[in-house]
Amino acid sequence: MRDFPDWIRFPVADRVDHAMRWVLNNLGWFFDWVGDVGLGILISVERALLFVPWWVAVIGVGVLAWRVMGSKRSGIAMAVLLFMVGAFGYWTHAMNTLSVVIVAVAFSITLGIPLGILMAWNNTVRNLLTPILDAMQTMPSFVYLIPALMLFGLGRVPATFATVIYAIPPVIRLTNVGIREVPSAVIEASTAFGAGRWNLLFDVQLPLARPSIMVGVNQTTMMALAMVVIGSMIGNRGLGMEVLLAINRVNIGQGFEAGISIVFLAIIIDRVTTAFAKAKKVEASTGEDTETEEIEEEAEEEGSPKASA
Image (cartoon, rainbow, N blue to C red; front, top):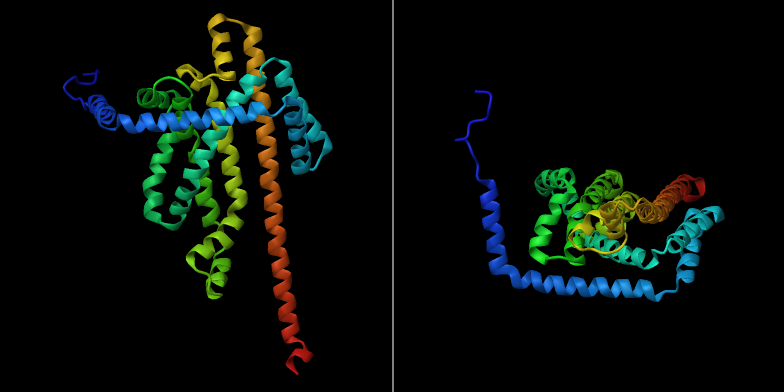
C-alpha cells in the first residue's frame, strides 16, 4: 500500500515521443532550413567580432562603459576585464561565445517584446502565457537540450535554440510589467489628445516602459550567458566547451581560466546594460518632470490677470 500502484499510469512519454517523430517526419525540412539560416547568421556574427582587432574592441568597451556608467575608473575596469580574457588565451573562444549570446538575445528580444506587449494588452493572453513562462523558468536547463538536439542535431544552432527558450521569459515578463505600470492618467491624457493605439504604444507606453524593458534585456542576456556551458554539451564551442573539457580532464587551471573568463564577460555585460537602463530611467523621469513644469506654467499663465484680460 505504500508504493504507488503500477496500474495507474499516464503515458505522457510515449505521446511526446510520438509527437516528436511526427514533427521530424513531416517538418524535418523546415528545421533543416532554419538550422542552415541560423548557422549562417552565427558564422557571420562570429566573423564580424573576430574581424575587429582586439585592441580596438578593448578600447571600445572601455569608452562605452565610461560614457554609459559615467566613470573613467569603471571604463578602465571593464577594458581590463576584457583584456584579461585575451591574456588567458581565450579571445577566439570568447568571440564564439559572444556570437551565440548576441544571436540568442536578438531572437529573444524580437520575440519577447511583442509577446510582452500582447500580454499587457490582453488579459487572456497574459493568463495563457503566465503558466507557460513559469514552466520555462522552473524547467531544468538540461531539458531544453533534448528537443534542440532532436530538431537540429549537434552544433551551435541547437545550443542557440535552447538558449533562446531558456532566456526569453524575463524580457516577456518585464515588458508586460513595464507597459502595465504606465500611469493611467498619462494614457487618458494621450487618448484625449487623439492618440491612436499604435501612437499610444510607440510614443507613450514603450518610452515610459523602457527602463523595465532594459532590465528584462539585461536579465535575458545574463541567462543566455549562463547557458553557454550547458550548450557545450551538445557541441557548442567557445568558453563553455573549454570548461567542459577541463571537467573531463580534471584540469583545474584550465577550468579556472575559462570559468573566470565567462565571469568577466558577464560582469561587463551586466554593468553596461544596467547602467544603460538606469540612464534611460533618469532621462524618462527628467522628461516627465519637464512636461509637468510646462503644464504648470501654462496653467499659471492662463490664470494670471493678463491672460484673463
